[in-house]
Amino acid sequence: MRRLPWALLAALVLTQICYPLTAGGTRAACTVLTVVLGYVLSVSHAALSRGPRAALALVAVATAGGWAVEAVGVATGFPFGTYDYSGQLGPKLLGVPLIIPLAWTWMAWPAWLAAGRLVSSVAARVVVAAAGLAAWDLFLDPQMVAEGYWTWQSPTPALPGVPGIPVGNYLGWLGFAVLLMAGLARFVPDRAGADDAPMLALYLWTYGSSVLAHAVFLGLPASAAWGGVGMGLVAVPLAVQLARSRRARVPA
Image (cartoon, rainbow, N blue to C red; front, side, top):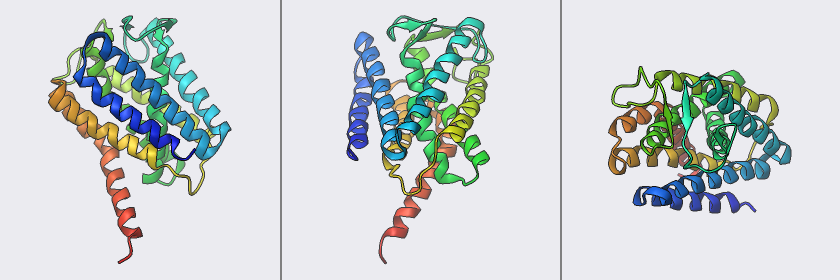
């Protein structure tokens, strides 16, 4: 069972590699499959590394919470701005495609674990994890808007070079991410010695592959830059910390 997270990660990586090589309905299918694989990876890792209660808490906080905030957002325009989902991402519940809360869960877990490697206090971990999750949206929204998966009615003011997405959306992501991470801090127990390597690898892969894909394959250089800086505030220190830890374990 310890190999399961790595197997799921390998399947996710292969699916994401296929994404820029496809178009239309096939690309949408790759998107859905990526989210499903990421969701199963995060929830199964939580169960294997910290027990079923941790996995249930992750689902309750990130999946149910993610769906709730998206449903409120679609209905009221708060906290992300006024937006609508197209029909390309599968069935909806109250206007929210069912895979959307899965996406919140998929990246919330590795962001939480990454923050745990960088800071020690609970409060600092909540802040760093929230920033690490919200910064992912600097890649996600430009990519998904470019595909027509969702649109904003009033997409201004926007970040320079990234039209179609209001700045308030990113602030909404950060605000909800803080609440989400505070929930994980409250309900998910930590466990010393847990093998979090697959999830840390997922976080770093998401960062590096997103910069490359946006800059080279998807024609989104501005979001490559914004996401590279924003998510890099967590991903780069994490990579450095992991490299130092590995060197420290190697006998002289």
